[in-house]
Image (tube, rainbow, N blue to C red):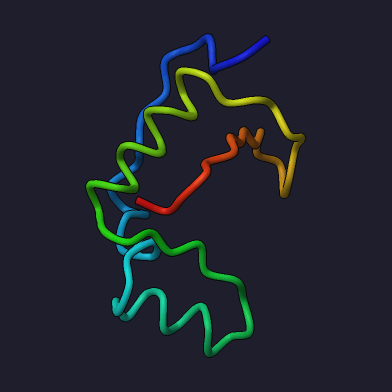
Amino acid sequence: MSGIDREIFLDSRHIAKHLPGTPQVQRLLRRGRSAHVFNNQATMERVAQAIIETGEFTGVIRGYERYGLFFADSS
């Protein structure tokens, strides 16, 4: 099955930790954690929508279901 078949939303509290140059990203990196950073917020929102519509379930990590989708480029 592709996509996510229930209503979900992008939690605005987590947006800053995915945008370049934010204090949240810098804090993750200082702590030795990974940071999944998008080019900008518009790109992040397009990726999130595409994953909701056609993403594949990739497993459960730290108690959360994860979905992914391969993109040919970063734009």
